[in-house]
Length: 80
Image (cartoon, rainbow, N blue to C red; front, side, top):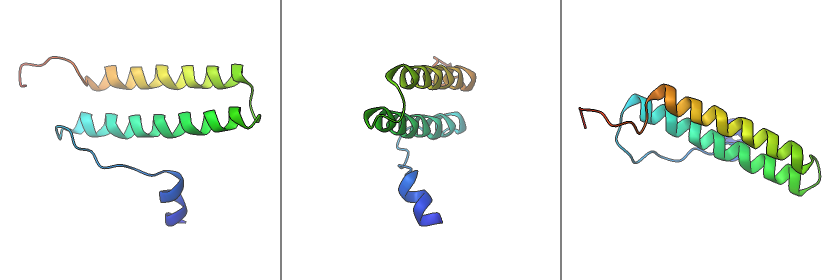
């Protein structure tokens, strides 16, 4: 089961500044990319409509933006 999960949901190493919020956002970003890939493949193969794919991607994008804002990633801080 683990091999299948690693194949279907690969995770790449993080090379940025190691802070908890950056690590969490990186995990969210990788999950976003994986889901976008699945949605695109489903749409390409005719399993879902273009409109449905667009709506799902738009919802995922909003979720990622919300995550970034809540984590405070990319904001200027005095401890940089």
